[in-house]
Image (cartoon, rainbow, N blue to C red):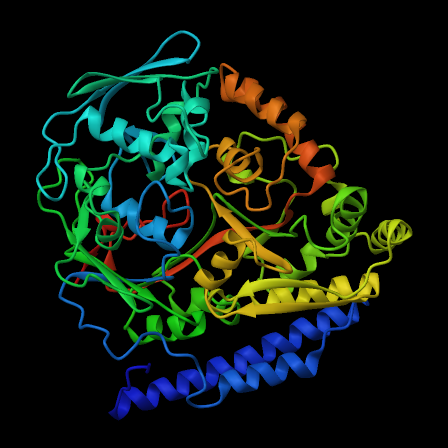
Length: 581
């Protein structure tokens, strides 16, 4: 693996810029350590952090972006930073951003979301609910096809949804169909049925959906990738399809080896796309970086066109100056947490509840968001995102998210009366995502406040971390986060915390919480659901199945040569609309 090498005067300017950035990194880190120490909150291991930064600053020591078989980028292609997808590219089995960001360009569903998150009918000509939102008549627009020419019909949706729901298929997105009638009969390991009784085809352009309980927000969810249609080929050679999926969206997989694993993936414009949101560029090249600082350097050098989710902490103070006319720093619908597996010694039952609350109250979120993130994060007050605008920011019990070292020590001591804590409390993170600095700050705070050993635990890539979490082999706490699939607080609650949720990695289960979420979904309007979600979140505040940290801004930078670059409601650029000189 290597970084492309420039030469001549340009290379000299690049070296000078790197030196200036390295000095800025040094000053920023020194500021972090000094500010935190002056407040007396905790003591950072300053020498260790500075030593790590010196290693990063040494010539040739940065991790490389891509391997030597990286292909040349064609004219009019947008080069996008991304991570290697965890799984084969199946809409029904992808629940992380590395694969999800790619799939949302390959597929178009019944609805899509505008820049502000409002719902727009896409393939659907009409979605008509009955009076209590338990029955929906869905009519499709004619003339849509998959990338292989196969027509997209009502059966394409029914087959995809049945495949996702059928238990023996072990699809990660199964829980999104839990409210469709017949789910209980198809979802078990030894399912009695193979198809959902709540899905019925009327004709090629119309089907109906019957739900078990009312859900007025059901149409809003239908723009998420789990609800996309699938062609017949998806069920014939699943391995080949996951490597080279056939979608119906504005982009399609490039011919040949489109996916060079751990390197890049290329999609090209679909000139036969029947939808209105047609691509204005020739395609997208997703580059998989092992180090976000390297990605930022490539963005500055023009080898990368956009860094969509992760401006490195070392550049947060300067990226808007580096890219004065091609950057954005705005609130978005996402949240960051860390989670503690319930099977870790000391973290089950009442003892575990006390320890989670103690750990949460040992963290000064405000200080970290100011000094490490330069106010590009907002301290968390609840489990979803305040940008959604449909949640009361004053959730009962949210004092567990406030910095209170005295109370934290008291709660930890109560837990120790049940059983003394031994060993170290660690937080795992992916080193390719720019998380090291905040993890070190958080674990230092926890360690100093509670008088225990606490450290960060680095995994080289996001995929490696997710594999350990998914396989339930992780032996520490771990960083996690949520970028909304569709603009609703329900999307934060259902997949992550409802029993059996598609992203409920810790198998959290609380019947009271599940009941409240069902009540909220049955409400006639978002306004009626709001107080119910507040009650549900108060349950989460007591149990802390994950520990909320902060809400990231969409801190995004892009190549000044791009035109029509607009940040969407979820912090991602609207790629089909971008044009490139």
